[in-house]
Length: 424
View 1 (cartoon, one colour):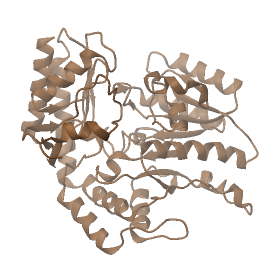
View 2 (view 1 turned 180 degrees about the vertical axis):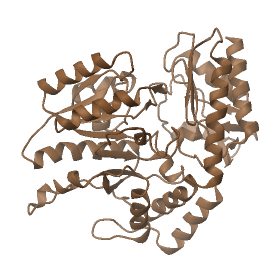
View 3 (view 1 turned 90 degrees about the vertical axis):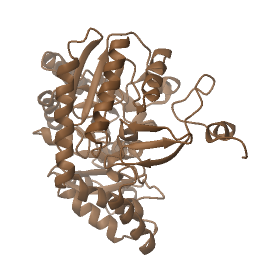
View 4 (view 1 turned 30 degrees about the vertical axis):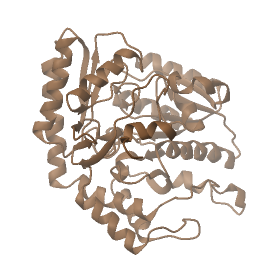
């Protein structure tokens, strides 16, 4: 529309996620992105300090990935995945199996993180149904987040998302995340849940609860919970949508565990922000429970764009970069820089807790604020005014940058956080 910018035109027809349009500021119109930067329509640049919701880990417009997308587009743009297959999907399954925990055997394609978890929960429930052992209860952590579809939402524990739907959700029993000091208590609660319910699956974010505010928990403790669940025939579902593809230091957070999950959920950095695609992988044992002469025992769950050739092509390109020398060096540098910055700010009077794991940095502020309250909005604006995109989660400021972020850009983020701390 002549004379109006993107922000003004947007407001006529568009409904944005996680937005109360009655009170929200107009969205910022973005026109270009490259590396760890993007630009608005006024020409202002911003450092993408959270890799656009942890997706664009190899940077915006990465030429290696865009080339793979373009080449695949001219070869095979799309074909439905029921009754057909294609090279990008087959090759991606082969490449992933070389990286995933060794117990994983099969790959099922979905569209996004929520649907990856949704498929995992349905797999778990039907797995027991097919074995004539009907189970109706999920186990999940307090304050977890797994997505916005109904099964994924049921497993989530953040009421800000679930409130209107509480009466319609699946049956879920919740336990605290395991820490060194509470392991006995958490195990006791788990034993009580296992003995008092017909538990089908344990759904968890391994090591880091993302939407809860980048809360870390014990790998040893999680390992004990997985062991106990598997001893009781409960399938363990690791939601690696956020943690996967190098963010915690390892390729997958589950690599820190002795007892591997039965099912993994992957998305976000899987396609480097270039294409909506996700994967639910599982063990051969889980897959075998769906093999039957009865058609109805198959997994009748489908997405129109399952295994989209373009998505598979960019995922393959991303995997080629993941453990390249350049990216591994950048991952290590960011992790080290985060550790140094944590040491620097941990004694600040406005810091309650500063922590890092891999390329994830989180700082809990000594302030009272609601998750989407006015103070949180002021924090968001504070960073944007300084050319940095960070989206605080309540009183938690976190950084999860693209692997290709420059040292100077990373230091600009640290400087903005330091300035915020001194201004509070």
